Image (cartoon, rainbow, N blue to C red; front, side, top):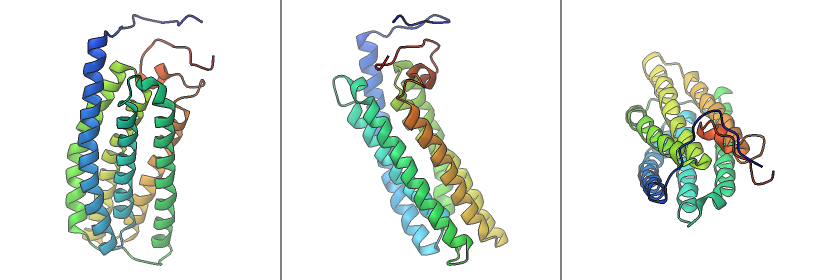
Length: 228
């Protein structure tokens, strides 16, 4: 089957591919390091404050570590494309696991089984993440698009979700602190779960014939998938 295009397609040389692969490994290493620290702080502060949103944010950081680790594993191989399907599955399952836990935890708070308290540490953490995560996501997404890697782009979306979640977490914690709206914490947690489900579904479909890699990477070329 011959690939069809609606415009020029850039063909990468071996040297450029190696540069992009090394760049992705560097981005992944930075992401893992940051998220390990973020997860420890968020889970500790969330436990102290009984904050479903903060605990969910910490769990999302763990999911990001798993997602980034899957990409690191993929790009440690001489031929990363052969590991892309497994990497996408790992990313999808990590999203679904996060969503399930956060929904249950937020439900406990909404039904009054526990009440979130003020967390200055959580507010500071959310603000820092809101500043850092968009840049890491943009850098990985740009690199993944040039390389044509659906899994790298899926991982960049995971990082971008952290930006959205940071904003949701920050709003929820501020509303709880400034206005005493305890329920805002649970709503922020459910927002986190909603994003996780959406991105999990996209990652799950990322390696199927119904959604070609070109559609995920933003390329206009439509490449035939392996099962065609």
